[in-house]
Image (tube, rainbow, N blue to C red):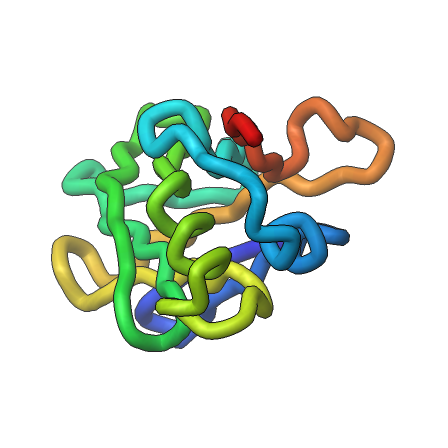
Length: 133
């Protein structure tokens, strides 16, 4: 289960097999606008207050990007091209995993559940990466 909730201090980490090896090759140029982390919301297990919630993608404990998640959203898209470059050139250190957290803004007891089911890979978190050599 991938769940995020500020009130219960729940965060989540997502790791992608072989992403570290891919980034270590240092021969790729990533599209900032066309490289995304895509996640689908489990609308049955989630409770997002009418005010919504802020979701942060923490990077190497030094920086983060964020997006607003509304109560009727069914997916989340984070642009990650700049993050991939940061891991590739070492400014974010070595790739370990991607951490998802929320904060005390808005309603503190919203619960976000991200779909993950090995039997339905099309709805699992994924990286859509556009790059060139």
